[in-house]
Image (tube, rainbow over all chains, first blue to last red; front, side, top):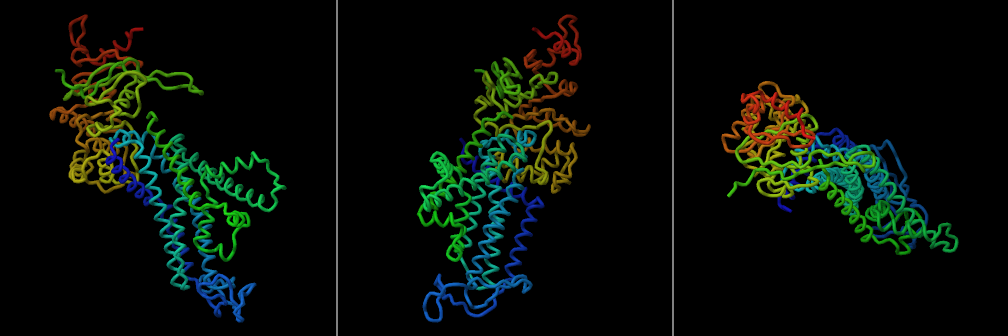
Length: 329
Length: 254
């Protein structure tokens, strides 16, 4: 194997895929969406009296220096769109900003953004691997696997660029307008990218096997949903077992299969927990009861969740590369 | 000592799985053996589905033979390094439409492992050669079929190949384009380089090729000089290549 040639090819493919993305309207559409979200964050303003929460404290402290329960009586407001929309503060400015960041990271980028990018990039690999397009490339001296890996990394580069613009832009805008600078929010960039990469590796395998854009798009979305479902089911089963161990409606075989599936497959729901932890919303809102129970039981291992997810993605990509290397054109 | 062949096929067969359950076998080529020597223009002719493109694909490591051995510059075709010495023109190339003509040549030059400085030097020369110098910065999406084919010829030459493989290179080309391809083949020969030409255009084969291989239904029925094929042994006169080939096609041994 000629490694320098392979690395050189990977670099060329990354650059080429980025050029391909730049030539697409969806690239600019996504930048516009990011721009709108950044503009929304720039329109945020916090109004109202001082919060009861003191810097560095998670809990509210009342005027009598004792923990205060209930909503913050400060009557502060967050205004959006330069005052057009007014929302009462849950507690204080920081909590409100963390909540907004959680919505942006989990729902706008993590759900809608990932779905849009999966659909859009689904055609990149199948088009690239069509015989009429690929034969001339495959007759070049670089290893076949490097062509697939290069294209894959090219898509990740583009997605990473969009994630940096979106998360970095909204972080900066919210920080400037509210004075709340949460470095953890920036951690959502690698988390979002990792989540996408793992799901996209399944699309890469489908692309090599079928060369069909439709199969890649639907297959990747279904796989994402399956992984999310297994991930959620595992946590729900654990939560239920902790509450009423004797009353579990599921047979042990099913629970074993869910547990095995959880460790084998990527874990999109765990990525969501990590995003929540990064933007610290878990401190203020608690999150879903199933996830909270898993966290309380110590059954959530972020390092292992990340490692096994990445391992699965790498394995899928390796299988796809091997299949491409053995395919007759 | 015999000179190393640029390409050598030894008892090469290729079978593809066929049928709904892929239990059947479709034979593309069977027991084909011939050599392509350095410096010659070698033609590969035959009717449709004779197995010509399959042999080209095997030579370019695009697919693997079911049986037999194939070497490129004396090395097994599995060794991809020697592909750096090969240029390939596909009959119907589909290039990334978002690239410009110059961008495409730079991209393919890089993947052919040509040093970047050499690529930058060669791109304007090649665009000039194929008559696209004035369209260098234009996206391929705006190119006609003939212009894309010219660009395909240019990309095949980006690494200054020792072996140029032309698979139906005149597809979609006008008269000027065909002359251009013929000139390129002649220049290759003058420089001692080798060309493998797959074509249905017999006058072109007759004019350009030194030797040729004739395939019918996946079997090799002739490999040798063009002049020898044109010589009619019964009358002792010279016949046209078309007549000679027609006779080969009709008198196929069982």
